[in-house]
Length: 45
Image (cartoon, rainbow, N blue to C red; front, side):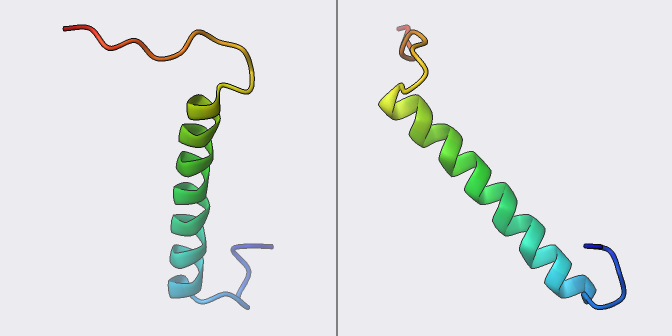
C-alpha cells in the first residue's frame, strides 16, 4: 500500500527517511539507557 499511486515519490522518500532516522535515534537511545541489559559500549584507547 505504501507504494500505491496515492503517494508521490517525494512523500515516500520523506517518509522512508523519517522512519530510518527515527530507527537510528531509537537504537542510540536504547543503547544509552541500556534497557535490555547488554554491556555498555566500551571505549578503547
